[in-house]
Image (cartoon, rainbow, N blue to C red; front, side, top):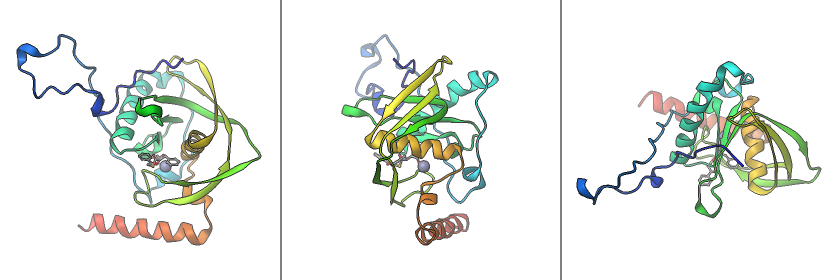
Length: 204
Ligand code: K1U
Ligand code: ZN
């Protein structure tokens, strides 16, 4: 059982605009966490191995994880790692929203414990490499251990898109982007486009 309160996307806030003050419900929605600016490639923060979350980081990590979830839902995306919001910590969030219902997972110090020998090729995108997609081959199944917000060790055995997403997010914590799994030719085509787009954004 996960101990995480989603506190995520705007669509979970009840619509208030059609209600008069007298008709408003007595209970108030949980305050929405603010989104964070995304770090866009190329950026050295995306190429750096992050550091372990320690007991001293715990209070900060809870609020940060809620803001990362808000950022991921707003993007929209199915995962987000701390370096993508400029934070040098081993922290990631994932939500594939099965049945269109929120099912956020907050992963502190996640670690791939086991991978299958069978591989699968799936198209990947990245919120730090917007508009670029490519087929990436990875192990089909993974076992990932992580700490939850209560400091309890949890284990996920994943296949399908969740397995791909977990590997993509843990790669981020090691400074690895999905383009690093491609041939040098494909990687350079994508990275050159990113350099060009960054230059265009900078120069207006
Ligand atoms: O870490 C990230 O950059 C997020 C990335 C995760 C990911 C996507 C695909 C395969 C592996 C990992 C994204 O979420 S990109 C956006 C995306 O895939 C998506 C967006 C809306 C609905 C469904 C998927
Ligand atoms: Zn990514």
